[in-house]
Length: 66
Length: 302
Image (cartoon, rainbow over all chains, first blue to last red; front, top):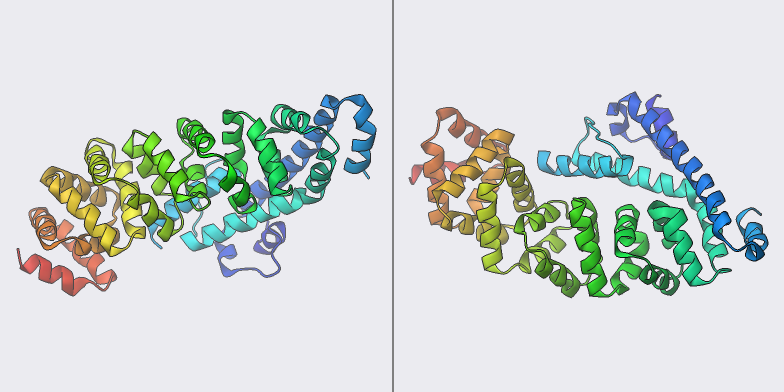
């Protein structure tokens, strides 16, 4: 992963000079962290829905999954 | 910023990433990287979390708190908290257990929930702080110092009996003004006890003590340095040994030059009694800090 890729990964409009000194491996770690967080969030919401009384699930689903 | 500030920033970044990290960056650059990454992770999840925050209002608060603690977990609750109204977030927080609130604290961005944190009663803050101490979450505790009222910080300090635990928190406080306020809440006998405890502790604690001394102003450096000198040459020798071990000469010079003349003299005598290479290291550090003349004058007076 290049410094430009890492800048994009971090959502930076401009690439600060120090980014050139960051090893490529960090970009991989960050990408994996973001993906892990995304999957965890999805799984957690699915699990949370199971805890909600079924009468309320319909209304909640409309808000959570429009 | 020095190696000490860099070390603290690496610890904070490791805390966010969830594992040890070593990068060839300065402290200010590490801080920018950490803040950018933290913001990016939150932005990734924001649309979903916003819907969760909206959806939670359809459910009774007791159920939301129970699902939050039992299913959502600390990281997500921490992120959603910043999207709720202060009153509602506080209502939910007060329904949760101390261990869970401690986990939320470790994951939350205090800037997004500062008002909620400020409104939590002091006795709950003390209980959560002890949960965090038991987990060694010094970075988390330090992040909240900026957002708590002085009297709440005082209640936490009074409840922590181990002065070295307070030292470890202080080393990660970012705001010099807040750190000075924190140190100012310590009674002189507790400051003395902290420095005495340092003498028997491992070298890492001296590293944290020097981090604090570096952030504080000269008045506090003088107070702490003079207290160390009062405790005897053994304590000053242990300080010098830690400086030698971690090569923190540039942190030592301003600390010593802020002390009173008698304390400075004792340190200078100890340095001059050591190997010539130690003296040369201190002189080089004094030169790097533009304090060479002051250091030479100090040594010449011994």
